[in-house]
Amino acid sequence: MTFFLKRPYILALLIALALGAWLFSGHASVEQQSEAQKQPTATETQTSTSVMQVRVREQKAKPLTREIILTGRTAPLRTVLLRAEMDARVIQIGAVRGARVKKGNLIIRLATDDRALRVKEAQALVKQREFEYKAMQRLSKKGYQSQTQIAEALTLLESAKTQVEQAKIALNNTVIRAPFKSVLVERQVELGDYVSIGDTVAELMDEDPFLVVGEISERQHHQLKLRQIAKIRLITGQTVTGKITLISARAHTETRTFDIEIQISNPKGKIAAGMTCEIRIPLEKVYAHKVSSALLSLNDEGILGVKTVNNENRVVFYPAKFARATAQGIWLTGLPKQLRFITVGQGFVRPGDLVQPVLESEIALKSF
Image (tube, rainbow, N blue to C red; front, side, top):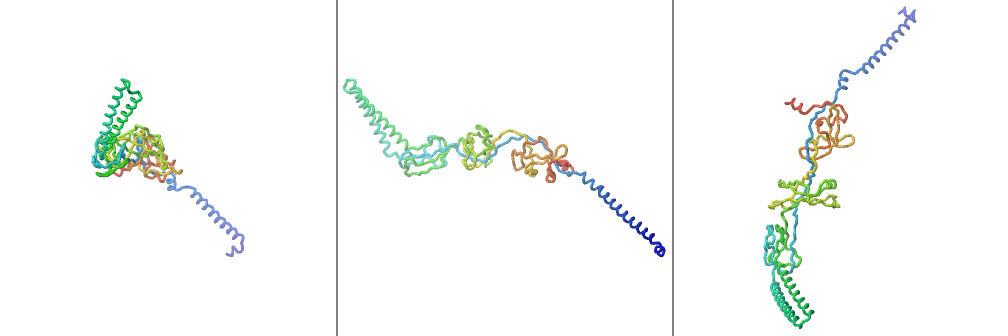
């Protein structure tokens, strides 16, 4: 200690050397730490080079017939309201409600009253006018009757014949018959009722052929044409085919839809009017993929579609173009015929990402 007190410069030199060594050691440790931070660890290197693993399903497109599917209802091709053409009382009922009638079958008979007598009276008048006309013709040959008088007699004869026809028509109008083969839907009168001219007495419906009516959208209107085949599935499970007989040229103001009518056969009358049915109208054939609706996702632009993996194992997004939707899945068109759809992990990858695809079939074999 006395030595350093006698020589203080030596103590100062030692302190300076110690301080420099300490500073140098701190700088070296900082450089080593920075170098260590710059160099990635083995785990980081492995993580940076790893890719997302997704499960894919490889499938080929299948031929599919595009269809327009509508909900419709059955309806008669024609119905008719039978009306009374005279004032009379109902004296006979020819058919009950729901009965199937043939053309000419009696529906209602009205009281004739004095109409039969009027026919006989008019017929008797015709005979009288014929006698008068022939008598004038004989007198005319002898020069006792003019041509004017003969023409007048002929006019009276024709008028009498007209009265006969009118009386017969009035008598025939007392019998109301079925104008065609049909079913009696409604009968508005009963025995003893009094009807006036124009009163509805019965409603008849033609059962064969029958109609299926529905409505199509503005986009579907140009896709259809007359005589095109349509398949009908009734709510009872029965299926029939028919042809389009009407495509309306005017849309409904409220719904902007067009009426469509399809004529079908109903020989035994098993199809009733007003039944709900499904209408399928086949269009062109296309190739489509059947996928689950769970595979659909939105891209950054908000477009709905499916994510697939190409040959370079990169994610490719295809917008969804729907051809048909069923309870088992949806059919998409406009896609390549062979694709690998991402079934698990599509929510964690974006288009263009490099992924590691694993086939569902391989996973199934490993689990087995």
